[in-house]
Image (cartoon, rainbow, N blue to C red; front, side, top):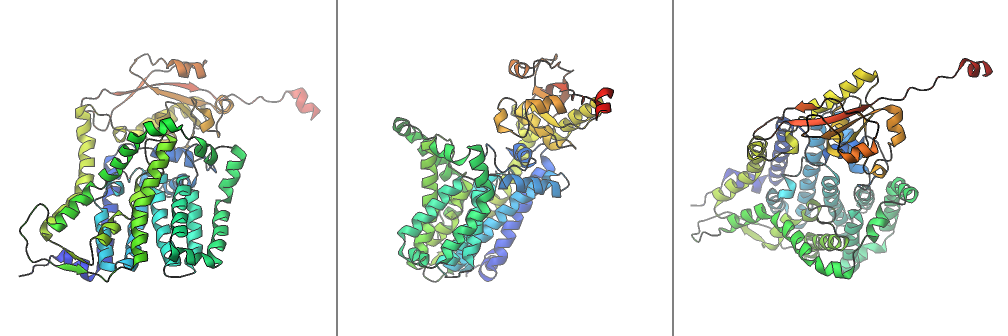
Length: 516
């Protein structure tokens, strides 16, 4: 007797509903976990918000769009990181839905839903997602670009050229890796006869003008600063170094493959490996896929990853250009496409259990890590009490000077945490590399005042030599100790700090007033 699970029945009868349930469930989990259990922001979020707060047209980290969106989400959420976590999960949901919409046009709705469900097994779409930044936004934009390129080129829907142009412009405003991804797109268009035919109309060329209009403000910034894209493209290594870095390229490929470990588990469960006994199983069938669709999916599932890793090795970067997540958006769809026109769901109970395990176990492990890591001597960034740290230093400055804290410097991450959590949202100043924070200068520090902070184990709070050299007149204050969310076997958090009072503005003398 053929048994069909209710989950499989939903997949067959309501594939779009299955996608929405999976995407929203994952988004809810990875929004709630950091909101409820993280004492401090993960990854580079403090720097993303510190840069976004300045509303620059570009910085040393690249184009500005991701930083602007993060700052906007943070402010709209009432200066809460919940807004940033939600923004990141919106990017994941947009990616999943774009892949489903693309897959529905190529392999049908049921197989497209299977492709999205397989994406839950790719770690790049789960564990790192609370750490919002250019990688997360690039992932969503690249998925939309592939969808709308397909609509415009394969389906001949002219209106999608405009959407495609705007998205390409936004991609360039998000990451310089957009140049590589666009190059991959252009190469496919040049090599494929069907795609080349779409270039005979005026729509693609008009769309390129729209993309330039979207990108224009950042292009002005590149011209004015002389930094950004071209220096990055020119920082290539010698041929000898490229040969030496072959192992680095293999490591990057291994990282991309490792991100697919969960997907491999799901595929193994579906095909029944390593079990040999077969039982009657439901089969999900699709119409045959034409050659152009097959070429499109396989090309964009493999070539961007190869190109990004090769460029990263040439430039000497430890990770693929643009991050891993944008490079693997079509992995699930490629697996489903290559699986054939009929996919037999063997061992349904094992497949369903494995899928729920991949959905639930990573966030559960993230929560366990918050409480267990300190007992193993591991100091996690998310275990540091960011609100308490920011409150103490901002209130101390306000109380002593009568002015809101305007600038914070010293240890970069600690300074970024204070910039994030203080009510006045002070500007972050990277005093060791001031060219990276051009919105603040040493003159601004003297004029507006600042808090200089550094981690220390010395109860006297003596500043490190490099900080003392940059701020020779500072007098260290009494060190401040903070308790972690979970102390475990870790020592208390001790920070040395110094306060630079703002310079009083010189008042004009009575003689000068008389002359006026």
